[in-house]
Image 1 (tube, rainbow, N blue to C red):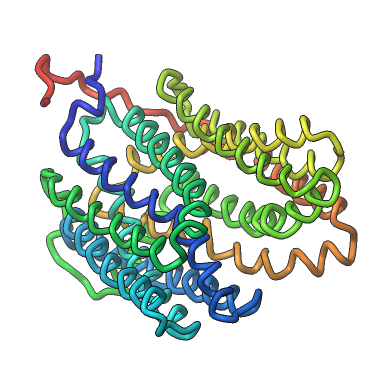
Image 2 (tube, helix red, strand yellow; image 1 turned 90 degrees about the horizontal axis):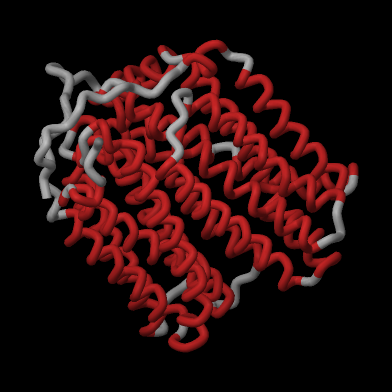
Length: 410
């Protein structure tokens, strides 16, 4: 029987740091939005600030993957968190001191996006180094549960902090969470991941990561599915959801729907702590079909109960898939290429989202919001059916780890 992942100090420090980081990440978007509005900006200016952050995040993530396979991943996490604490501290100082501006927020937002991209692949890849292989699925599940709960708390606190203290002080708290996370990451003690004996140029190493992705059919196929999912669903949630649900059921109902979805994430994570299907990726891909329930409920039901159920099913199904997906990557990708593969996964997941956000409004105006939400649900279901026909997805099985020694590290 494998030891509980939380018995391993390195994993505890990793989860603690990542959870504190996400607590601040839940606060930052709300505080930043009100900061832009307080400086006289509107939807266009806010979109510019948020868009530049996202663009920098996607643009730098490949290099974050390369560095995560070149350097100790703990160093990447500590350095990125410390630098982010400084940058976000300057943002907070400018707002509290009254000398901020929208161009300044946009420029510092680009820096924060780059730092987030540099840390992301290393953070994901490091899980495998902190626990024995027998505890890997539990470690992934516990980490996701803790981070989802932290994000829920951070988002809930954000509005209270902005109202009580202002955007500047709320972002100062976000800066402090980066500093605390850096201190927690500094306590991680793990053996360095295997590395290639010879180092090629930066772009050649990116190419090596891409070849590792293409070597696994299940990997590139589901990255393409993620791209399609974010292209269609991103706009359905962020653009049409507030309009359709808000108009039919009231604005408060949209907040309840998002809360129901987050509860689905947490419940899904708890299920994966005990349920370990042999073909976790194949089973998880079928559960991904549940994500169609939310857009279809918004399209065809005026019942609040059904919309909340659809939102909960979306979060639940996506979390079951996400754990199986993460476990499959951790177990089957070469350790010296793991961070680079995660960087391609992140690009595939998020590069299409801005396009979907831009196109959703015009397409919904052309065919109708409810019709477009139906299309989104159909695309999700169709992509799941295509993915599950793949022999590589169907046959990929979790590993049988070697039994651990009787005495686990405490």
